[in-house]
Amino acid sequence: MIRDRVGGRRSMAGGVVLDISIIGLIVGLVLGGISVAKELFREAEYSRVAKYVGDWKKVYDLYHQRTGVVLGDHLHAPTTMVNGAVAVPRSRLGTSGGSINAQRICHQTAADKDLDDEHAIQVSSLDLFDLLAAAGLKPPQNYGLDSADRFPYQDERGQRAVLRVCFQWNKPGTPSGAGNVMALSGVTPALAAHLDHFIDGEVNALGGRLRQHEHALPRRYGQPAVRWGDDGSGSQSPLTDKLPHLTAHWAMDR
Image (cartoon, rainbow, N blue to C red; front, side, top):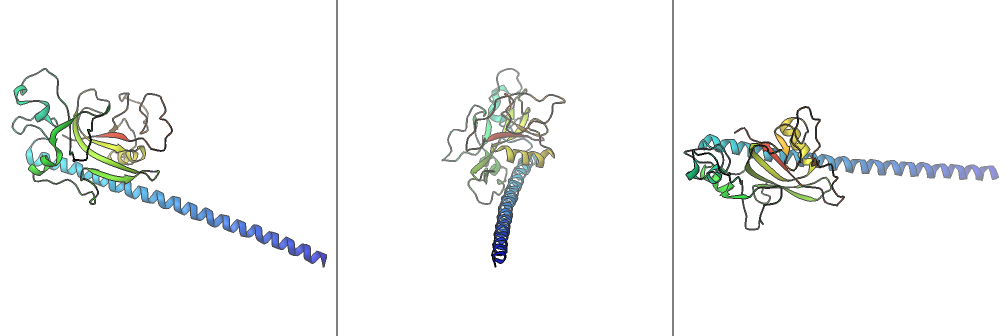
């Protein structure tokens, strides 16, 4: 009888261990499934953002096809610069010398504050939407969210972020590249890496057509790939609950 009791207790103990193992396995599978689902959701959202940014590139090119100039340039005496009509007044056309008043072309809403910051140039008096409307064009669809020049998304921590589209001309020597660019602000490092792969087929914050604006060092031949979020200063970003928001410059074809 004593042996039967001992054997019964061992059987019960083995059953409890087995039950705990099964529960642990189920919990692991559930948590793993949630993690995979979040990753799939984020990738799908980043793909929507990439399509939206690609559609802006198409609109920019269509504007040039219809008008013969880039956004904000002189129609009859083009400078090939975004915002050239403001940056190079008519009185200086055909002359050399003097500083160029480079400004970015955005769409300003009544709720917007001044967009200028230490990494950005001033905002032009020309409005992005007005220029498109004058050429018979409309901004890309952003699924009816906010203004059409921005795209809300969730970052990898589940926090709300907003990508914003502007266009500008970068002077020679700009680390992110000279010439006309699409300026994408409010971009987290993970989204920037996704967009970089979408545009260039590789991830390098200082290489290809999409580059990080905040980087302190110019691109050098043979330099290894640089991660998005690395500013080149050698300092580490402070640990905060909010992910850093970067500005990426996509070099336009014209």
